[in-house]
Amino acid sequence: MKFYKILVFSALFFCLTFSATAQEPLLSATLSYPVVTGNNYGNKFTGVLDLGFQMRLVNTEPMHFGLSANAGYFTNSLEADQQSLNESALVFQPRLFAELDTPILFGFRPFLGLGYTFVRSEELGISTRTTATFTYGGLNFNSGLSLDIDDYWFLLLQYDTIKFKNGYAPTVDISDEGMALLKFGLGIRF
Image 1 (cartoon, helix red, strand yellow):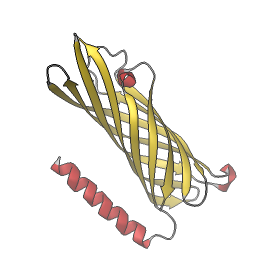
Image 2 (tube, helix red, strand yellow):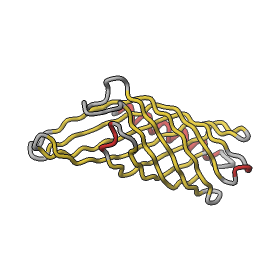
Image 3 (tube, helix red, strand yellow):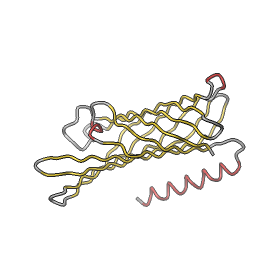
Image 4 (cartoon, helix red, strand yellow):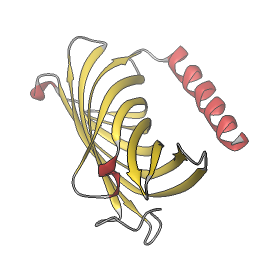
């Protein structure tokens, strides 16, 4: 956990240093509603919130390349073995991305990303007061489209597909060891 705190603070310092000297927006942040799609492990979860952060490192006309990360929160309540369970999952998705930005597309910006997803899932037994925690991850492919509202604000549609390592998902009732997410949101460039 200490490593993650150091990593986050280092990235934040790096980003603020870049944005202080930039002439056009290099950074953006998003707030999205995640929806789990498909018949897979994540299908049992309900999305609550997804926060995203993007940093454009290389700007070549018409492409932008950079780093991005998303953190999402998901919940689930279920009955299993005559016991009520509350389950929550925190999904962290760092990745590299490429974005196409050209006037020909009239404010639409398609993008692709590749990274790794970390999932921390916690099950709490209501009647037995027991807690089980699982940590797992897998390769993440990301694609999406943003639509500029003005020079700073934009709408976002994003799709993530995650392939967990073989046998790495924590439950036995999965038909596909993966997870698919569709995110709808709003973002700002600064």
